[in-house]
Each structure stands twice: as C-alpha cells, then as structure tokens.
Image (cartoon, rainbow, N blue to C red; front, side, top):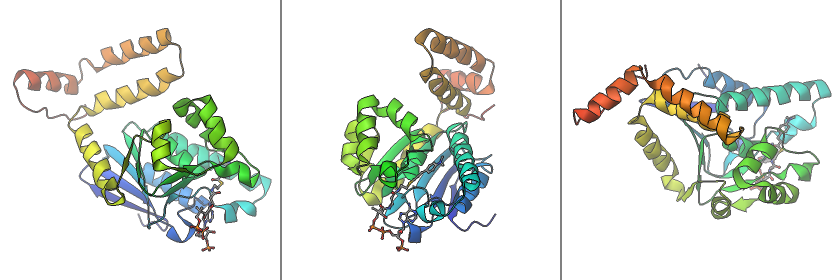
Amino acid sequence: MAYENIRLETQGVITTLTIDRPKALNALNSKTLQEIESALQSLSETRVLILTGGGEKAFVAGADIAEMSGITAGQAREFAAQGHRVLGMLESLPIPTIAAVNGFALGGGCELALACDLIYASEKAKLGLPEVSLGIIPGFGGTQRLTRLVGKMRAKEFIFTGAHVTAAQAKEYGLVLDVLPADKLLEHCRAVAEKMLKNGPLAISQAKRIIEFGADQDLRAANELERQGFAALFGSEDQREGMKAFLEKRPAAFTGR
Ligand code: DAK
C-alpha cells in the first residue's frame, strides 16, 4: 500500500515504521494517524516493530497544531478517538515495539513513544509534554503512561513545566532506556530486536501481556495472571521446541505456534 506520510521497511521479520513528514517535524495530523493505523493492521508477518521519525530533527513533534487549531468540537472528538485507537492498537500489539527517538518527541510524539515497549533515544533527542503551553493537557495517555513510568512527582514536574528534557535527563528519569549516538540509534534498536528474535515469540507475547495487565493489579492477582500464562505455554510447539533444543544443545527453531 502506498503511504504519503509514513514509510514501512521490512528486514526479515523486523519492520521499521518511519513517520515521515519532516516539513512539519513529523507532526501527527489525521491522515498520518490513519496511515499508522492501517500500517499496524498490516503487520501479520512482523515479529518486532521499530518506530522512528524521518528527517534530521524530529521523532514526532506532537499532534499537528495547525490542523488542530481549526477543528470543530465534533472533529476534535473524532481526532481524539482516532488517537486513542491508534495508540491502544500499538500498545496491545502481541509483538515487541521499540521507539527509536531520533529527535524531538513532544506532546503526542512523546506519548507515541510511551505507548511502545522500549524507548531508546539519540543524543540529539529532546522529549517533553508541552501541552499546557497550548492551554491543553496530554490527550493520548501521557498523563497516565508517564506517571506509571517515572512516578507522580517527576511526571507533574514534566507536565506542569512543559519543559523539553535532553535524552540524558530522560534516561536519568527512567523515560528512555539508553542514549546512543545519532548514527547508531537504529542499528542499536535492530540489534536489540535481533536478540529478541532468538526467543520464543509466543513466550514474548505472553510476557508482554502479563507485564502490561499485571502492572495495573495487586501482586496477588498479577501473580495469578503469571501462573495462568506460564501454564498456557505448556503444550505449545515453541515450549516443546525450546526445551528439546536446549537438551540437544542446539539453537531452537521457534515457529510461534
Ligand atoms: N504541529 C504542526 N506543525 C509543527 C509542529 C506541530 N506539533 N511542530 C513543528 N511544526 C512545524 C513548524 O510550524 C514549522 O513549519 P513551517 O513554519 O516551516 O511551515 C516546521 O514544523 C519546523 O518547525 P520550527 O521552525 O518551529 O523548528 P524549530 O527547530 O525552530 O523548533 C520545535 C522545533 C519542536 C521546538 C518547535 O517546532 C515546536 O515547539 N513545535 C511544537 C511542539 C509542541 O508543542 N508539540 C505538542 C503539540 S500538542 C488529543 C490528544 C493528544 C493531543 C492533542 C489532543 N486529544 C485526545 C484530543 C496532543 C497534543 C500535542 O501533541
């Protein structure tokens, strides 16, 4: 399918989705969200998804302010629903997702990264939730996902000041995992993806689901989820192959079944 504002590249079973509207620093307008949504629906063969931004300056500089400034309340409702749908879809993909934050990740762009499983950033990256400077608040889950990641007080500082923080600061806060030189960022993300690809896809998908659902529950209920997920993998071809391969001292050939 031909896209205008994004690019999809596949290397084996790793797909890189580049939001590619550099003239507007990759800001998310409704067309771009639509394209991301349809790209996410087309990933049946993909086992790791990497998200990044096109051009030199930005990952995604937020929702498209020019488009937002002119919309009616009805269109705003549709835009919000579309944003929630896309980020919800991204978060619940049964495969690992990695945000390669190569530049500005502001507002909705920071929230897009927050909906990924892992965030790595280039030394040039700047992250922030500056919505209050526009008289609004983060609307794609930023108040909740950031708080869960960095704690309430840091999230309040981040959101109340609307400040852009450097990648190094973001790492210190626990918002990004590691900071890489700009020209090594994608390479690093692909290397992390390759490590994941050696492992059982069903197991990774189950672990992702349980970490996500368990994080919102008390320890007892979350451990019950783990018990069920653990048991559910027994009898899968991946579990049998993983253990057989270990005993036969060879790498496992997982099929995801
Ligand atoms: N939207 C539209 N265009 C943008 C943009 C954005 N978010 N960010 C940058 N651009 C455009 C600029 O207007 C400029 O366009 P031209 O003037 O060249 O036509 C071009 O990209 C280059 O930007 P600058 O000239 O400003 O470049 P600088 O290097 O000087 O500055 C900057 C870079 C990233 C610091 C600056 O562009 C900036 O502050 N951008 C805005 C960042 C921002 O405030 N982002 C948050 C947007 S609010 C919702 C859910 C979520 C949201 C909203 C609603 N609902 C549930 C309803 C999310 C809201 C947001 O994300």
